[in-house]
Image (cartoon, rainbow, N blue to C red; front, side, top):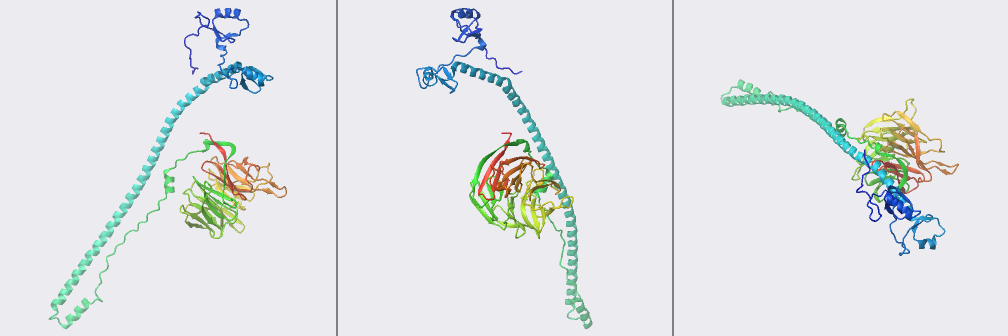
Length: 546
């Protein structure tokens, strides 16, 4: 068992002159150490002195001069002003205050400190020492687990290499057989052509040897033999080689086969009080949507459909004019750092590369695209579509190939009425802000739940929506009551199952008419308003590992 360090040395001697006995007692009045014998004599000579056990002694107040009256010691404590005083200070300014001896306060504080120190030795330091040992064990476990990961990855890499080597060996065998057949055919063609050349050369030689004495009937026969009309024209030597079509290397598919290293961040964070970290005033006529590209780039869209790129200081870096005149989340970043945005008029999804060149990635046919989101899980592209009164979300892969339509529930009813913004949760659920509700479906497109409002609020009109590392769904409410002339602008926090948790931003703290929400790489919430040119950044998660 851990103990408070024993700092005891030689026994403490009595202060009485010529006495060398152990002092068991202490006089708090004159601050002298006393043995049992000297204690009795001291009390007889000093009636009224306070004698206590040595362990319960009061320490003598160290001498300290008054700052105002340097010739006087500070020995009084004013309880009203909570200041140490000398006698002159007391007489001048504190005579009507409640006071006590400073030595009493001094010893009370010493006693409290001693208790705290004792508690530190008994409780905190043993626990800390235990944690040190525990961390050492955990470090070894981490090394062991990481080593096992490396072995598993190397084993899988070896398996993939073996598979590739096996495919290569099989293909080489096929090529060996093809090569043998083709070369044999070519050899036969070569030999046949040589024989034919010999035949022609002999025929010509016979003709030339008979020219001087050839008879008419023989000439007629020879003419027929050497006529180009009857002779076979040698065929051109040909060969058929196989066509080699190399498959396109797909890093994503290889990574899926190899395996992926993931870190669960959810255990590192917990909800905390909301604090505003910063605000950025930008050159914009409203902020309808935000897309953040770590570590220092973000894009906004304004009320006129303009896309504007900024650095973290709010300086404009790039500008794109689009046909999107609706308040929607019509731009997003891919995992490769490319910007995607929808074009309502051209019925397309466009891609902006890092060098700011723009190309069309997807043509949406008869459907007009609106809200868009690029998955951080698999890179798939989710696009909100509309055609007349129909609404759906279409899933595409990175190359723009259509994979899935999400439109109907299990009863054949339309899932969506008006898709404003789209995001994806950590479990792959697709979350969309709709007309007066949040609609959530799973990765297969099956209906999960809808959130309309919890009972304590008077109106709900969701726009901007995003999710965080804990799977929370954050959604902005831009409802304004014309009858009550009341602003209900706020940011809701729902759990992963759609249960209301809290208002992260109440109408009193929220920017008016919030439309744009996003989470940055530091897990902070960015909020932009439709009628504002300021982006507000809030911290609401606490990193428990720091």
